[in-house]
Length: 162
Figure (cartoon, rainbow, N blue to C red):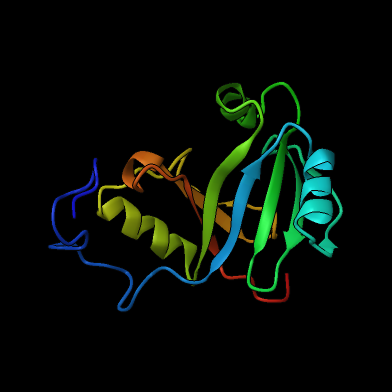
């Protein structure tokens, strides 16, 4: 299978990978953009029956409010715009009711993952330097054009419980 923007065939063909086995780790969370975390919490709690929902907190440096809905095998990360320059505004302009924004996979080494993605021709968003994500660990985002139309967040596996 060929993905737009990436070389045909094995993505790692002819490229020295930093990973000897599969890079991708467990699914950490699915990011869901919403115009209102408070309203989304009602949906997950009252309609879907979620029983473990964290407190809403701000991440001004990333322009988002965040709230985690804890599931038995993963999390839903609710993200709401914080401030006028929030990158989530663009998503919500196209999807006013909100929706799936990104998926997040854990990796053992975020720098090796970034270098591996770049070596394979994928676009790492921003400066490419990892920043600290909502779990307190380094993260990067890989452009949807290289990931089958899905914005992919890679986060270094948290060292403790999250």
